[in-house]
Image 1 (spheres, rainbow, N blue to C red):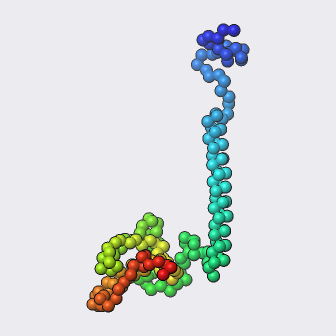
Image 2: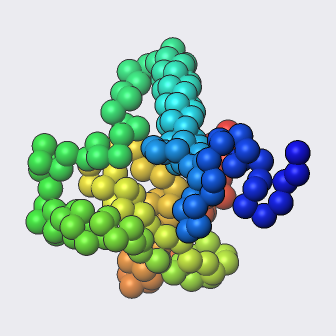
Image 3: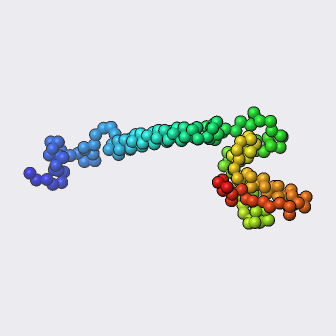
Length: 180
């Protein structure tokens, strides 16, 4: 058996001569790459669902631990859109601020930069107020140390205008341990 030119192994196996300009040996339907791509997508989808299920189970375990350790724990506090401002009697300026946050800052993921001069806490620095900080403050839920620091800066300015700043010493709440 001699293999040369158009007399190749496929021609011998099929028993038909090769026709120039045609491709032989390619079946109808999906190519190998298409099959591999589709199977990869299916495997990735199953893996993603497996991971999501594991995360859901872990979340339930953590929520149960919170319920056991924190009396009256409300899991709704962990939801991103928990702030129902319609149920709170807000002053017009605070309501306007909240509407600005929800319509302008939140959609663009912006935050507010507040400069805290050295004379307030002993060192100058910038802090950033997130949309959630403002909404938490307006909703009368627990606030973080950043909001307290910004309020302290406002209080410092007020005391300074009243020439009373020398009567107090202010401490950055971000520098105080929760264990103190």
